Image (cartoon, rainbow, N blue to C red):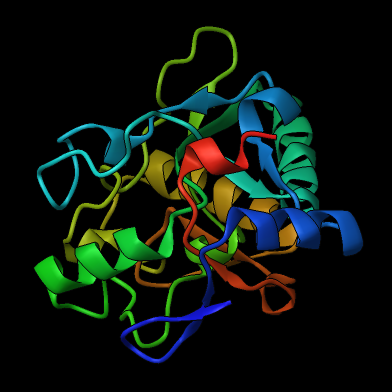
Length: 209
């Protein structure tokens, strides 16, 4: 495990990550499209359509630690009864990307400070919206992903009733399966087991096992 320039212990070695996977249950980062094939991906950080205005991922992939991916699969299954499914905007995020984001944004409300790291770096956070299962069409929610406005807050109330209902369905279903919402962003959820996992700074290519 390496120490970052901000004093955090971060796993940067593929060998160390693989050893963890072999010796500790649940450490593996799971490809969400393999675990939950019905998911819709819209990985904004693989495109310029994000807060930074440039792509920071080389490919549009989404990974979570195994128990977190299993919990998200339960969310997807539960939503199916309403004809709904999840759209994933971001999941595991390498620590170096978190550093880059904070150094450009400089706002702890919208970017985790690198001296603390992000639960995304642990493979335990996911940014999601809702779609209609029948056609993949987006379900109306308060804002676009990563929109820095008051309406992004999870308790913002000046919204049409149908939008508030959709947000409530998302928040309640995610909560039921162990995800805790960050109140500044309706789309951001941390799984309750996040303290069990280390910070990672590995590219997507290194965890595709």
